Amino acid sequence: MKSKITLLKLGGSVITKKDEASTPNFQAITRLAKEICRAEASPIIIVHGGGSYGHPTARTYRIAEGFKDKRQLLGFSETHEAMVSLNRLVVKALVDCGLPAFGIAPSSFAVTRQRRIQVFEDEPLKQALKIGLVPVLYGDAVLDYEQGFAILSGDQIIAVLAVRMNAERLIMGADVDGLYTADPKVDPSAHLISHLALKDLQQLRVKIGEAQVPDVTGGMLGKVSELMLPIEHGVQTIIVNALKQDNIYKALKGEEVVGTKITKT
Amino acid sequence: MKSKITLLKLGGSVITKKDEASTPNFQAITRLAKEICRAEASPIIIVHGGGSYGHPTARTYRIAEGFKDKRQLLGFSETHEAMVSLNRLVVKALVDCGLPAFGIAPSSFAVTRQRRIQVFEDEPLKQALKIGLVPVLYGDAVLDYEQGFAILSGDQIIAVLAVRMNAERLIMGADVDGLYTADPKVDPSAHLISHLALKDLQQLRVKIGEAQVPDVTGGMLGKVSELMLPIEHGVQTIIVNALKQDNIYKALKGEEVVGTKITKT
Image (tube, rainbow over all chains, first blue to last red; front, top):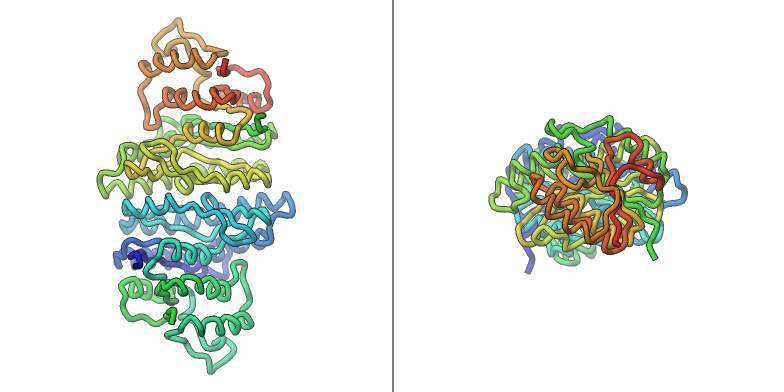
């Protein structure tokens, strides 16, 4: 039987301004915090991405490629600190509307091996849920057994959490309406897929891989790849556009909302 | 055989202004960061306290007493966020003088049971040391299996680290010169003890317990109690006044410095 845990991803491109380095989207963060507070979904774990906060520094220092040069160490520090700073804004917005949000740093409890989670100490998170705190995690620069360090995406974190915590549902708040039959920017016949089964996702994955330019965490291809495991595990999954007012609220309430639902069969 | 790891504690009353709530002592933080950078002691782990940052909020919400009331949850969040904010200042000062400092959040990797460390995931920290990062931890509000949450002092953290990492030495940067034969504030015959053996420490512990007003982390009594285990374990331990220029530098360099050395025999 599934737990009643809801996992909510807030995409980095939703909570930061994509085209401006280190610029949080305060308006989106505040609105989303209010939607989350109003929906009163509990227990809930929130994971957010880095967007324009984490990615530029990570790119400059080539953090995702691993440790090759001492000079990268300051970049590792800077990338992590940028993410902490963004996390504090999200936590503050939630606290301001009355939710006891608790920032948890992935680099403090997780170690990857070749970019995949290997050590994942979730006891603090589990205990936090037990007393009613709302854990807020994020994509982070983490230590890696093979390559020294790596970028651990919020998508990988939330997928692993969904399986480990036996979550009931996973809501992916993105900056697009969901998955399309083709890239809507180049193909005018592209349309939103409102419902998708796991077997179709594998095919779509190839298409997306061909169409998208990957960012440091793998972009939409990375997102979709990470989703395979929780969906296989039976976690109800939906991708919605978190830039549009009330979509996250509706998704949390289980109301009808434009987006892409993905189910096991 | 001992590793070459140095552990350095920066007391909360050193890096914050004791009498002003949430006021960092920027001048002390910057000076200490420069002393640490100049000393080039490596590998090194730094742990700092909360001082006027963490303690007032922790006191207001009675975080140390554990979870009794839902309203405390926002206080838990606030206490942790205050410590993150202080940690970021310390990390930034170190990065500014060229040290790749890496903030690690105790509440993200540790869980206590009745205020004593039970879960302590040190893999990220160990991997960080391997590639040359300087972990910077801090006293924190953490989850507790028995009482919901608790205050985990920087002193407990550094003592546990000293033993687990088989550290060579432990430098306690305090706001006093070291341990005294009596409370110097009330007894004019009190004098600084420059060297102390473990067996004498136990006796002194009783005296201190009678003289001091405990703070949320146990104050000097807590500090001395925590030191017993690493000293028993053979870790070279010294308490020095970190408010005095160059004391931390000298201690890191192994030079003569006013303070209290404590040895196993």
